[in-house]
Image (cartoon, rainbow, N blue to C red; front, side, top):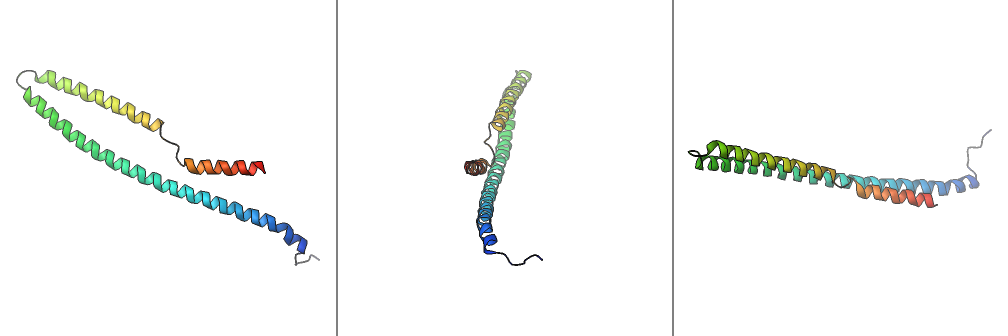
Length: 130
């Protein structure tokens, strides 16, 4: 018949294991909190950048439309087609340059959750040393 009570030897053996498991859970909780903080910061940064980008595009388009109308009106009697073609070429070149810079910015973006990944790597190295 099995004994339902634990011997002092059994509770002594489980003590370090329980402390290690508790430490491991506390460590993972800290890392998850760091991950949550980084996620919130990244979301706020993206929203701010998107908002400013949309406003910049709207204002830039309004300025380009006004400039195009002004230049076309100034040269309407003499070189209207040539001026409109030149303006179109300038806009197209600008669009290509912006697209290439945007693509470069996406490729060179920092690693998301870099601090969390670094801490997890430190934790892994610490456990390997033991």
